[in-house]
Image (cartoon, rainbow, N blue to C red; front, side, top):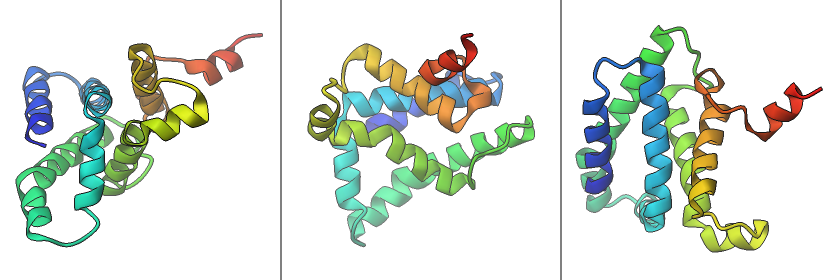
Length: 153
């Protein structure tokens, strides 16, 4: 968790002065890459989050709450820039966590069901682009297969 938080904080420091849309797009892409590189992370968080414990309280206080505050701030900045959120910010954060992490946490199942390697570098980048296109279409620089098909005559 500390590694992920440090990565996000380092990225955020490098994006000072950059518009909120670009920051959110890059941070979400980093999160997808992190989830692919550390599939056990989501498995661990799912396990820890299922029951109240001192460790969960520590995780929330030390890591989850500061990250959530940062995402809420970024989402508020998006709204200030005129970009509507698809859900309230806290719910959106959990939707994003699930959409981003599940294919890596359940990689054997994903592979069995799709016959695709979820960790393939191109597939990871395509997943990141899809997340942005689905949740924040205004920020997407990727037309994706569905949009490309719609655009063709």
